[in-house]
Image 1 (cartoon, helix red, strand yellow):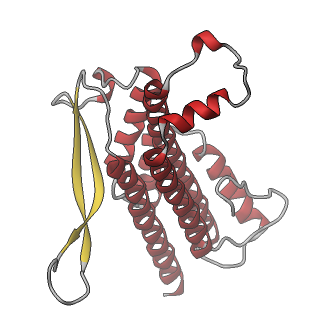
Image 2 (cartoon, helix red, strand yellow):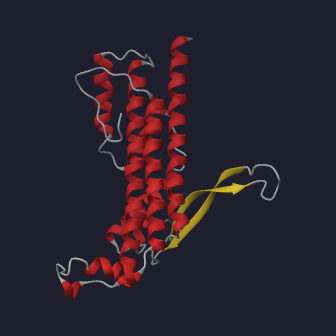
Length: 257
């Protein structure tokens, strides 16, 4: 199943959770690599090279509106931040949608690998109701219908508020995005090295790194923080797919006992 593939309503199908997870992580890695490439390219671009490219056609669409090197640096940075966070939100929602369809099939088939047309139709009905749901409602349905509590749910919701502020409010945090303390808080995953300086191969673990924006502040991320957003999505997806696998095992064990 591709990131946005919808099941064929005419054919019962088997859905491989491991394959879904692997395809998701492979796509996420491509986003991660592309971000690293863009960040590296941005560091190496020179003003002379920009001006040479601008003047190469010897004509511009609207020369009086031409932006200089510094202006384009700021614009490109803003565009990159919005693209990265928007892509991450799309990936998170895709992961939720794919996980839900697998859960719906498990529930309708009682974890039987043979998917009947009736079970397929039931799963698709559940999926069609799930797809248009708002983000918080998706999390609620996973918990209510399948007992799955999503790790990093708050981080994904906060990313949603972040892209809302970037797209609709010029990157300024306002009242709709803040909590009771007047803050928009992101919990990003980063690596803590446990045996730094020792002769053995360094060992690390994922830990939380808080990023806090107060109401009225502009949303700004460092290059590494942008990369950690993708790491956070990876951690979220890994936890989600593991929870889905455990649910499937519990249903199967219950029906075999």
